[in-house]
Length: 257
Image (cartoon, rainbow, N blue to C red; front, side):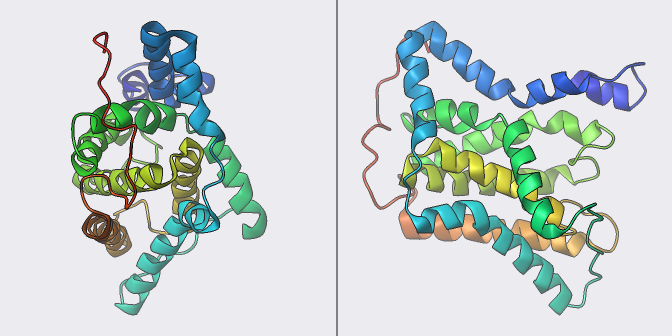
């Protein structure tokens, strides 16, 4: 990622090939699989990947995971309009929205390879040491740090965004994702949620940019994310961010980790 950022700025005379950029997105997952295989063998890898098969989460959780961020983004867009701020034009998409949304969602799903590393591997280990809120905050900072080179990569989705605003949004989103994961035990739902964020941010204009005239949508989105994270914490409690007991969170980690 750093090499590609340097290439985009002209500091190097080449860019990272697209296949390697896709592989870059799978870095956290590849790291999780390597460390799990090294410390726990094939059985550990099977246990890690088994969470991908948890799909019976209930209709409400599925709707919240896949469509919840669309509602939040749309609310930020409407609030900006109601407050009289300039509203940007919808992005030009070479197909109808009915086709574009599922296509973008599938593409986002395929190129997003982070969550097995973040929520499958890192989150349970953090929650073994800290409560769910603290674990989410720590992981949120690490998650944001993973994206730092993209702020200096010309043409990336993070280029031009304020780093501080992105950090706040990611940390708030980390709390929301922990809430989803702890209540459903489904890594699949978390991956779908991540893909939905990337999809809807491309469909609803002004969400992922704070450039002149349309920053209000960006900061309203950030504020709504923070408000959602605060409400979840207050209602479900910082210990587990869920009303149920997370029996497998407070486990003793192997000495090799």
